[in-house]
Amino acid sequence: MTTQKYMNFETTPVHHLHRGDPDTSVEAAESIDPTRLELMVLGVIRRLGPCISDEVREQFPGAAYSSITARYRALLDKGMVRDTGQRRPGKSGRGQRVMEAV
Image 1: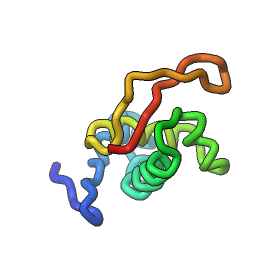
Image 2 (image 1 turned 90 degrees about the vertical axis):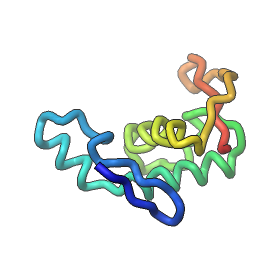
Image 3 (image 1 turned 135 degrees about the horizontal axis):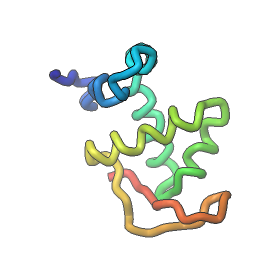
Image 4 (image 1 turned 120 degrees about the vertical axis):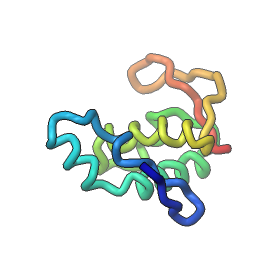
């Protein structure tokens, strides 16, 4: 499957967004705009500077947890965000990776 460019931003292929089964997973993946979500998450990471997932998710109070956290992998794979190797405690007290925009 080929990918398209979205304002110089490579879109994530839909087949990366679902498990393949059941068909509802495929329908759900096809119903969202992952590029828009990735750009929104990237914008927050750029604005916050080095940050953890809890800090990013606070910027999207109405969004589902998985709608935001699923974007990190795509942004890391595209080289738009990097893991600094540092960890900071999140709200749960457990360490979360510190990410920053590249």
